[in-house]
Length: 319
Ligand SMILES: C[S@@+](CC[C@H](N)C(=O)[O-])C[C@H]1O[C@@H](n2cnc3c(N)ncnc32)[C@H](O)[C@@H]1O
Image (cartoon, rainbow, N blue to C red; front, side):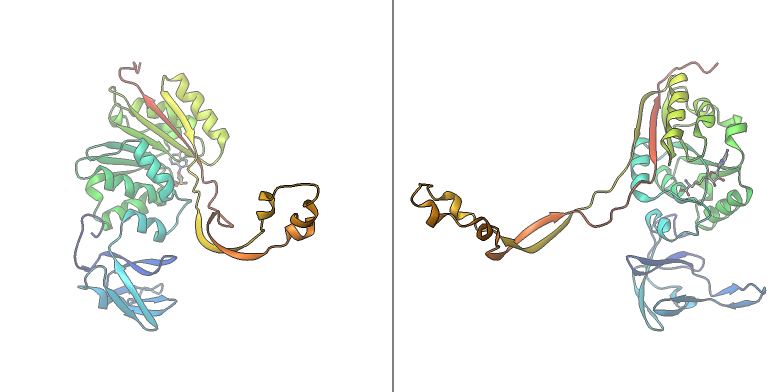
């Protein structure tokens, strides 16, 4: 139940983030025993690069504390959607925090909002929707892959979020969202290979008072087809964007400095020979000076997908 509200201490059954470093984290379930592949109940020992952890030992421990591993130590953290995205079991490609921040902002997801999502996938984005719309809103999430829908439903239950989400096993492109949801949604989000096929269903599901739409597509052709459908149905404020991270590395560097003082000297025919250094000389660095510099790192996170946003204005007839 560790996703539901802030807690001080780890309780049995909590999902706990075992934080070794910024690039090494694991999500573990705080239970003393587990069932192995042979069906035997065994003690829950979790292996890390810094040795093993007897999981029973963290039950009752304060969140944020440092715990001993057999060859080092780690911190035990309460999970947030951001930490979950970095540690969740991948059943599909997932959406990551930079794109998700833009999605939540543009869809104006807030407490009380009714949001429709498809596909559910690994539930990465769903956890952020749930945090934003609790305690009075609801997430309706759809996936046509039955095992994924079941796993997501089970995960939301174990995370204490079941009251705020309904998981459906359904092909939304062919069958649409449930008819009970017609005119019910404040926002619709699609992460599908053919989002254009689901746009008419999103149109139906949005409230008569209007709402926001978003589709995430790795390829621009998918976005183009989606935009054609949105335009036909009367959506406006249509906009496609990419969230790209541009990092700057700030460092003090020692750089060779060419002495350009000679440029200030008056150039007379007589003195030029003495005051102006030869081309070779002027290229020679005279000394190293320290400068505070800014540059881009060698590698930057690149393209993830195109985010297409649109608004359904109020009172568009849905005949
Ligand atoms: C890339 S994953 C979604 C990942 C998710 N946004 C996340 O962050 O974890 C796409 C999902 O869409 C589902 N899907 C594809 N076509 C679908 C359809 N027509 N109806 C419902 N689900 C569909 C797939 O089964 C898959 O689980």
